Image (cartoon, rainbow, N blue to C red; front, side):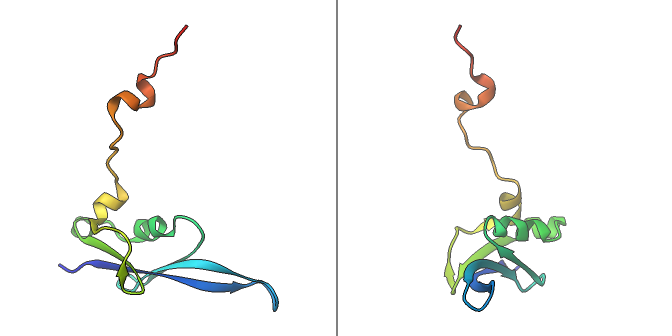
Length: 98
C-alpha cells in the first residue's frame, strides 16, 4: 500500500494593496484536502482523513518542496500519540507537602 503524501507550502494572504502576510498550507491530493492557517494545520488535515482500519495502518509522509520534514509514521500514530512521559512525572502522582 502506498504512503499518504502531504505537501506543505507557504502562500501570501493579502489584506489590501499594501498589506500582506504569509500563511501555511497543507494539502493531500489523494483525499482532496487542503488546510490553511497558522497553527497545527497538519493535525487538522490528518483528522479529516477517513479513519477506516485500512487507512490507519498507512504511512504518512510530509514534505516541503520534496524534502521530508517529519519522520515517517503511521496515521494511527499521528492521530493517537503514545504518552512517553515517565510515570513519576505525571500530575496524578504529585503530592503536596504540608
